[in-house]
Length: 501
Image 1 (cartoon, rainbow, N blue to C red):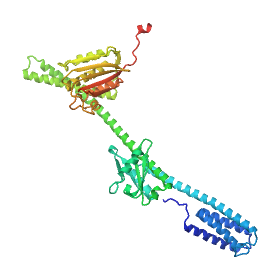
Image 2: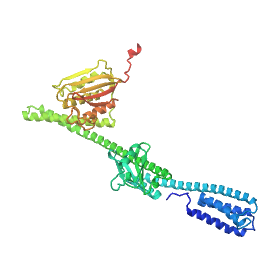
Image 3: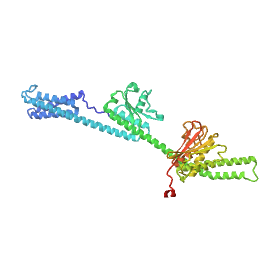
Image 4: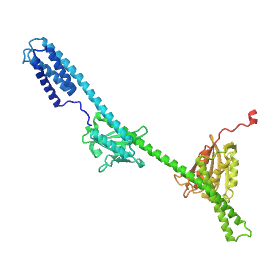
């Protein structure tokens, strides 16, 4: 629907003049029958009707025309503009003033009624487009709905620019020919401010670029263009265009969060399925692996002894079965940690004890390697699960021995504010750039680095975070990798004899 125009054209003035003539012809038979004051009231009624129907300009014409016609046809001497009685001058003046006032009031009432009708129509249109946008399930649908609405209401064309991969703006629908306005659209998107474009800048007709500003961020750009600049730049059209841009921004943001929710839900379901699969597979594999390890051990202890070649194969079978059993054990622990089924058995104890038990458990893996301990003498007791924390040290030491076959391995522990910072440092090739975080992902291995482990580091992170700490990998400037994790100090319990002092 086109906008209503409250201004009057030449045709309206012509119709006002005809109305004055018609009123004169209709009141001509009343001369001498009714009082002249009643004829004046008829001409005043004419002015009010002209103002309500045609506007203020034709009403002013009707006011002057009515006074002139009344003087010419109904005041003695008739058919002359002369006035025999001077009192009629006062009548003419009052008639003209009253006619002008009535005309202006009626014209303002007409303009307000037209404005209210236009706003009602716009509100109804915005309600309709909002209802359509609420059902859109794709960006293409949002663009089509906005284009059809602006084409039907304002007779202008529209293109919707929405960000995609790498924040690149994609046009819906695709622009014809070269997209010359892309730099200007990018500026509007980044700055969040509208911009008027001439035909040379837009590649189309005169255009207006409006940012799609949502409560969170700018979601795109609405580009509207038409053959004439006033079609997109007129002040009375701007509120409607801004409202359409806001509705489009809300619709695009709703689609964005819908995609985010879908991705998060899919990720949660995938993680849940993976955890369930890991748990099921781990349980099913533990029994046959235990039997396999037992049979391999029995072969190595058989009497009489097996031939050297067969004994070597039996030992290899046992070692690989033990390795596979360890992997399955890691899988089961990871599944339990992710599902929260492992309850920490935390006790207050010295950190040195769990480090010593870890080194004893890793004696075989550390054969031939020089290990140095650098523990601060003022380390307080900490509250942790000794069994799980031993797994952390064992995994980190195994990782260092496996991926850094040369050089010393150093374990350090220091107070750092309200936490204790523990690190395992090796002298291997070091981490590749930008892999400091990814090495802790499930089934991730550092390539050509001193870090990796598929499950080992992921289990370390899960255990440390369960204790309220953090773990990270650091590249050393002199080479090698530094695996560092923290444990909170907490508030140690007060011993009874100390409390009594």
